[in-house]
Length: 457
Image (cartoon, rainbow, N blue to C red):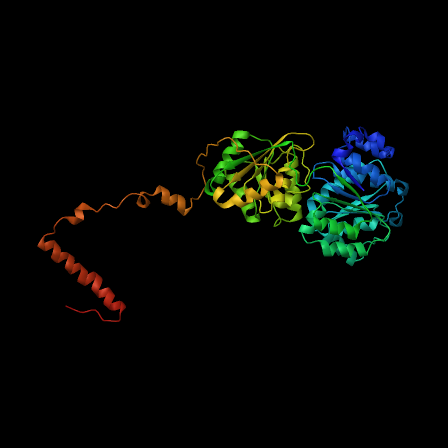
């Protein structure tokens, strides 16, 4: 069974009340100022409420967390209770996500949706101490959000069991495959009851995702609300051709010209992100970097500061390209074009969210990044328009590189001119003095170096 946005535009539900969700959930939705369901919510919520498996294709920022979390919570409401006994709060729904940041985000959304009920939720992910997570698991929870690796750690230490799970969600399934989580997913599924509802959400319906769906889902309903790898229409994209050596200066000028309140700048490597953030700080920008080399507490702190607008610029690797839903991001700048074309779509999807307009700029070195650009434009089905020319002013780099010192030192660009004073003919007396100097100051040390004894006159 298939469903897509084009076929069901006239059937989209205009109000959350039409879903007949539990009053406690509707109260929470109203408090969050959700006005009307998004296309993925309109299509997915009724199907999930009916108990069908779902295979959904939706980009991040389309409201898919609510699309699966609200119907799951509704179906769990009969089990809600205020008992303090952990046995009365077994895990009944499991949501697996690829990254720590997405796990934290989904868990916060679940807590908001269930705040007026007795349902408990918890989240576990790596990079932090297990003790607090273990205590929370031992107290019991009906809904658990987890990254695969950390969940397996808790299972091995018998901190929980999953024999009462009735719903399994694989969120950002394509990302989990990219990160090599398939063996972990297989081990987790073996710990679950065979009779369960399965929900899989992915940005693409690739052949690998379809194979995964056959192993995890049972006759799923397909829901596709966006074309594969479609860039958000709310994001205006620009391309700026800049030499690699000028990219830092171009970025500084772009940030100054635009004066965006919140900007995410993407780099391809962890070292590159850290260096770029350090450089921007030297240019008086309030900036910081997030990447895989930082521990979880640092990453969460930086993200929280960015969300609270304490940081103006967040420099990130692709660890932040998916799953992060940060309202108010004005623009995204690709300091380097990504090696995987699909990552470009996910990167620029960090802006222009929730109906807002956003801008995405790509700094592009034609000599080094032409193939990456061609792959991106082929994927999104159109050429990225050239941005307006940008004036690249010289910037202070602190300690100058050898390249810059060479450019400023005239010895590296001025032609050689002989010293005319040295060309003047010398008198016979001057010649004798020079020869005498050579024999005493040059020949003797050379002789000593070779092992000869100095001659006495």
